[in-house]
Image 1: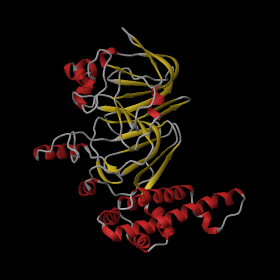
Image 2: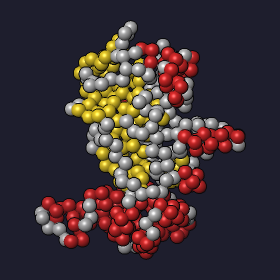
Image 3: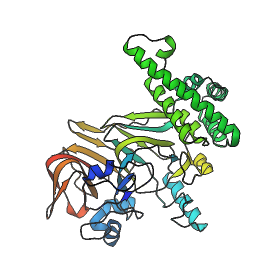
Image 4: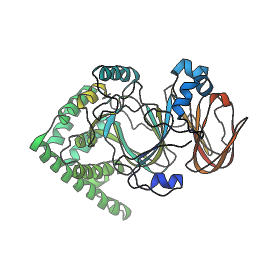
Length: 408
């Protein structure tokens, strides 16, 4: 398949081009879309758009089970993400909220391609991210007993007040109230607060760097010993975000979120209603086929704070890492709790290849042949093939590593 590239400003100039073995484009390239979403569908070798081919013969491409359970469109979308700068603070809707929001904006006459439209389609957007390089992100509200000491570390009245409120009433309702009030801040008071937060965060982050040097020489103070690597990374991040967004209250919300650091081969799952922002790295992402994004900050794009507050889950959660349901040397099957998609990652020959339904095969490394009953397709790093339900079981031959998106 030929797959379109999205050139958002937060992308990397060379990462996707290098992955595909081609010269870099003229600007940053953020996402490689591999699928049939109508906004940027892949193209088949005969020139047809994948979404059009599926619409013309859904039984052939999807199979009766997928059609019955999930409808007549490809239920998943695979992407390559090249994150060079932080993404927006955002949340994705549930299926019911997506349908309602799409109907509401359509009835109001908001064009699908309008910059201020939030619900561009009627599908939810849970997403699974699998890191190909070290990857960092913020996702979900941190457990309150871990957030309170971090806020107190800043030694600022605003942070101390929020810490006390959370300590007195460690509930989702308190978090909701704090975030609602925080995102409503504006004008000079907000600018002063962000300046103070940035200065304090940079100071703590710098102290963490000195802590690491003392740790290596076995000389650490009691106070320094309490600052773990996650906290150090968080304060360094907040200091840089204040510099980038000196008038954006969304920066303050990042102090309440889990910092998730993935090593290559590790994964995280972001379900509907989970506030998140990806920070940096190169990864595969598989999601329900949707482009619904509700933003609240850290972006020049349209934000809808009221809608984000309405659909967000404020329950504190651990960092949303996702472990494989099956694992063997060189093989992992990732099955998050959604009916739309799962992801198989493995060295060729892959331990278990999905035998039915729609499948997208992406070569991560090496050279691989996808061998079907009637056709063999040769792929190298960065190339992909779509396997239709009618193609039945396929074999993967060669030397390399692949990612296969399919329906559970």
